[in-house]
Image 1 (cartoon, rainbow, N blue to C red):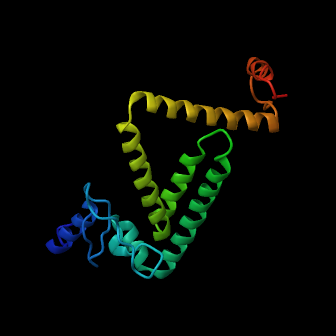
Image 2 (cartoon, rainbow, N blue to C red):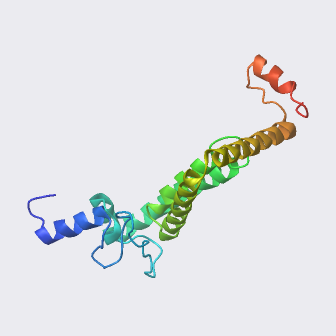
Image 3 (spheres, one colour):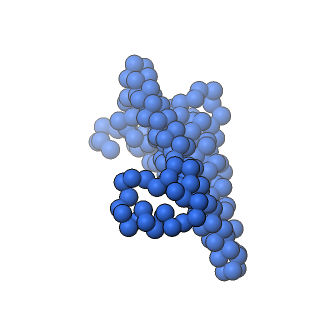
Length: 182
């Protein structure tokens, strides 16, 4: 913060960073546990300058041309990462992680992506709370079920595509011994 900034602006900026109410009275961040969900009820689809906690992006948003160029760049990069993650979901790899990373990129500029990301966070948190409240044997069954699904997806992919040529010879021999994989 600079010495020339009025004290009221500093307090409002700190409130935005802390996740409380911003200049327009809308909830602008997660805040502490127990806060109400974020309100994105304004008519536009992009985050407003008062909803931004970084000064450099707020300055960028003040110029229409640079704001449009920034939105296009964020939309393209975030969209490509999200689509690449969706393609990776059925294949072995970090598909959902890449999808959430793409949504994170999009959510830095677009409110629809922020709503999707908040939805995913809420449900992952609810799932985690539920699974941790279960008995150890239930968590074990869920872990084994997850492992079985991952194994089935990998087996299906290898049965469909065959063993990749880039694998070392010993890995190819092990995979060739698995029934259904050629």
